[in-house]
Image 1 (cartoon, rainbow, N blue to C red):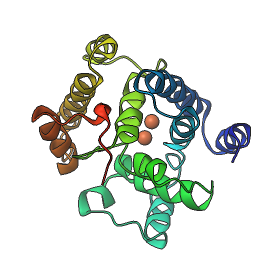
Image 2 (image 1 turned 45 degrees about the horizontal axis):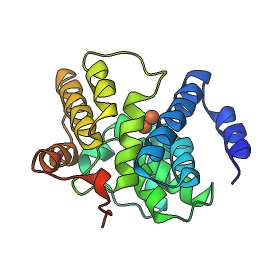
Image 3 (image 1 turned 180 degrees about the horizontal axis):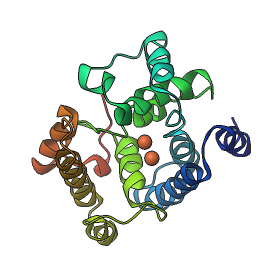
Image 4 (image 1 turned 90 degrees about the horizontal axis):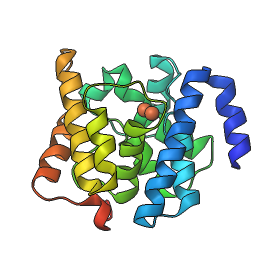
Length: 197
Ligand SMILES: [Fe+2]
Ligand SMILES: [Fe+2]
C-alpha cells in the first residue's frame, strides 16, 4: 500500500497525537536507516504501521491475534500496552498487505523487544523511543545523545529505560525485554548486521 493511502487510513483510526508520533517514528527510523544502510522503503513501511493497532479495543486486538494465528504469551495477553504489537503485526499482514516478514517481525516485537532482535526490529524499537515528538522522560536525553555513536548502546539505554518505566508503574516486566537487555549487555549487536531468526 502506498504511503499516502496508509496515512489516510491511519488518520481515520488514530487521534492526531498518535499520527504525529507515527510520523515522528518514520523520521527517526529513516535517519537511522541512512546510518546503518537499511532500505528506506522497508523502514518507512515498518515505521508507519508499527502502531497501526494501537487504537483498537482490547477485545478487537485479541480477536485479530487469535484469528490471525499469532502466538502470544500470558503477560502479553493481559497487557493492553503490549497487545498492539502482535495485533499490529496481523493487521499489517492482513489489512495493509505487507508481505516482508522482517516488517511483520519488527512490528511484532516493537514493544518488548527480544533477544537476537534483527536490525530492522532494533531500528523501529529505537526510533519509537527517540522520535522528535515523544514527550520527554528522564533518560531520553541520554538515549538521544548516544544516537551519534554506537546505536547498539543507544538501544541498550532505551531498553533499560523501558524496564525501569514498567517497574515504576508496578507492572510485570516482560521477560523478552529482560532478555533483550541481557543479550545487549552480553555483546549482542543488532546494528552490526545480524538477522533475526
Ligand atoms: Fe507501539
Ligand atoms: Fe509507537
